[in-house]
Length: 153
Image (spheres, rainbow, N blue to C red):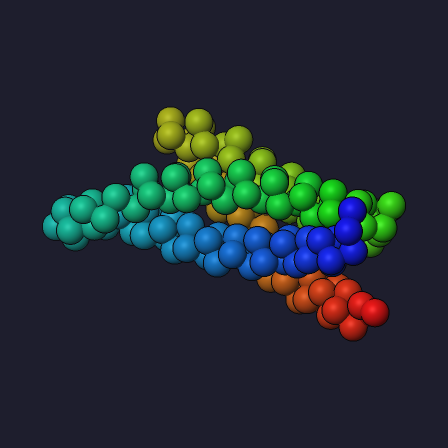
């Protein structure tokens, strides 16, 4: 692989993940609005239903799931292609754990749609943990980007 292409591929994963972090935040906002819609008074619910927050949360969440899986394995692939190995450390391990968390959270959707409150609470807890780890990943990821940027010759 040409050196310029390999160097530029290093930045595709971080850019994708920053966009995904923003999209995940938007999905969280929609989830909060969907809960407000479910728990609102009859009068307030009429106005909130027009926003279709639950449907939008489901759609954006599906996109977040797909991009998270592709981004995780894409980042690993680029690292392997550029270095011939993966660097097993906190950033990699937490990224893999995040992919597992989002898959578990998504797997609860059928139960949530059936009205299972415990599944809903677990879904929220998993995703709050995911968002916390995602913010930490953003910091460690930028440290990695800085190392790549400063080591270029």
